[in-house]
Amino acid sequence: MCGICGIVYTDPERQVDPGLLERMARIQAHRGPDDRGVWQQGPAGLGHVRLSIIDLSPLGHQPMSNEDNSVWITYNGEIYNFLELRQELQQKGHTFRSRTDTEVIIHLWEEEGVKCVERLRGMFAFAIWDDREKVLFLARDRMGKKPLFYAMLPDRFLFASEIKGILEDQDFQPEVDLRAIHYYLAYQSVPSPYCAFRGIHKLPPAHCLLVKDGAGVPRRYWKLSYHEKLSVNGARAEERLQEEIVERLREAVQIRLVSDVPLGAFLSGGLDSSMIVALMAGIVNRAVKTFSISFSQEEYDEVRYARMVADRYETDHYEFEVTPDARAIFPELVWHYNEPFADPSAIPTYYVSKLARHHVTVVLSGDGGDENFAGYPRYAFHGQFGQQGGWFAKLQQWLGGLWAWQAFTRQQQLWKDPGALRAFSPRLFSYYWRITQVHELYQANLYTDGMKAATAAYPAFRLILEKYRASDARSFLDALLNLDLDLYLPDTLMAKVDIASMAHSLETRAPMLDHQFLEFVAKIPADLKLKDGRQSKYIFKKAAEPFLPREIIYRPKMGFGVPTDHWFRQDLKDLVNDTLLSPKATGRGYFRRNSLEKMLAEHQSGKKNWQYVIWNLLMLELWHQMFIDQTLAPPAPRSV
Image (cartoon, rainbow, N blue to C red):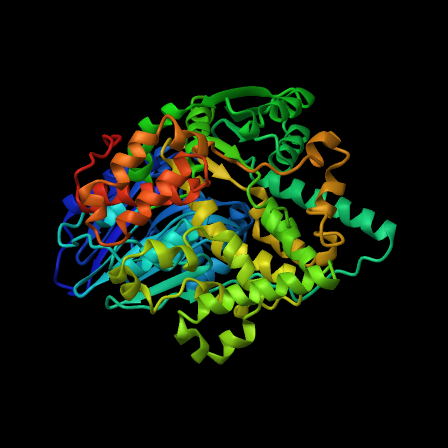
């Protein structure tokens, strides 16, 4: 993996400052410790830091150009079908100087222009400057595995893999975007295309952007469809489907084993990562290196299951125990995530990435299994919603509708949208309730009057409505899976993994998020993913039976949890109180001090569990201190 950045001025006579490009690249050095390069010509400039994975020679140096230096690229990612594309391009007369996938993208751009991105299979974020047309082309992979931020200023266009790269331009003054903060508080991360810094945007997953004269509009180039379904009738057809799932996943794993550096796998002991390790072990001719995290609190610890899989497949296994001393890395987390980020599993992800980097440069993960096959408990909850019948279903619907109505009467503008009204249902709002943290009912008590007024026009539920209406799903379960793949997965799960791993110069690959595998799984009937409204991941669990112990496959899902509930009552109690109740924090005008005091008292006494809300607010305040106030010192940047 790598880090990219660049500047294009609207004035063709203006020269890009190479020193600024150097700073934009250097501050992202953790993303690419092996090499750094900048290219500048007139009003355009590109920067790059490199983590060498394929073709470790100097021929892989970036920014890279075509033969006549008319097209330049800075690229972050891995293209798994680059050899086939390379052969096709060679047959059309293109010549290559390296073995890299980077050079393939350059020639594919020459051949197909903006449609080149549709041919790529993999994870990527890149920018191409075409000096012939004087255009900048940006693209991001289908699932948002690789980040890409940009800012359109009156006289220039800036972009970078991480926000801190853009902030190196001293003409850009960091200011808070309250709408983005409002969405963050609900969804625990800032959803695309929004950003916590006013004036900066995320290029959404599966989008590209053609910039001409400093302007452009993101365009979607791919969308997952749930419309077409496989016909699976009878036990034998179901068995064939199980076999095809395994074969397609094995192929997605195999193409991700191409590397000129050592690789391994994250192993939580859950079904998804265990299945990836099982398939890897059947492909490679050496022991797979596996990496796990443990906790002293038994209810959060899965390490015995990870050991079970490691023993079965004789992996070279490594572990690390996370303790409350993790507070020492809070400033590092805030620095690397660039925006407020409230998924506490960023802590173990950070540590397991650090552990893995001591032994390998690339790891495979099981990310995407739950979103593909309906593994989260919330899917079963909604599956049972329509299964219960009688008074229970009526009660759920009545309570859900009443609660939703009360929340929505405070957001009158939603009812002016007929499409939103048609899409509204108690079940959909219940889904929103289950995936959010500081949602409307909490906001009513927590927000100050000023914060309520500033965010009243931006109901967080609207994001779900927009994506729900855009899906072609015929079943409610497929609609929920699409929502998670479109909203939760890119901006929370993928952001968490990319930032935590790249903080240690570690590349993470997710076979279950291969877009061809996703397209196949989307065709599987919903009732084979959530059987009888309650058996989650039914067909995938059946497919895994020849590979894993039933104790691994059928145990209750634990998730990658962190014992912050205990930490906030004990080891981190003073840190939380001192941070959230400081005059600086309470003076920002976001939250009522008395509401904060009540919430902390309820949690610390054990009366209620507010761990996720507290973590959300804590990360927001620490981000404010580091990036806005600049009173919390960032960690020392890594050099190249």
